[in-house]
Image (tube, rainbow, N blue to C red; front, side, top):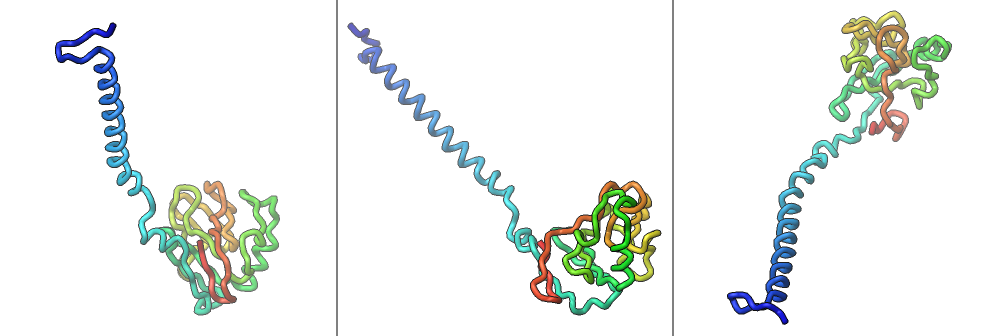
Length: 183
């Protein structure tokens, strides 16, 4: 026979009510926790302005042969150089065995005339010199990072210094002969 408590309920009824209140409390805490955490988790998504900059289109028609420009993509400088015939020939004739990070010029460009790469030194993240005509272009005619002495060639490949890898080539595609989409 079931015991009766002072409130007149049997012990079985009290346990059922206690179980129900426990489940109700747990469910309320779970819903409250999700309601609290959702804005925090949602804030980790990229903002609209960042998503808008995930790709950019650049008009290459104004770049003269031998000229370099810098555009910003994902808060990083991107170097675009319209290479001369001499720079292209020099980049193609380099022996892969002579390179720290062997990569053929054809693997780095889609159009021999235009070299597109992220302009951040792979040693410590400095911005190499070589975009302006008066800049030092290093021993190999490309780019030079004066912070620690990394020298890059006309294909953006590391040739001398502490940088472990070539200047990275971002994902890009030519939309027309003179329009490129980076990202």
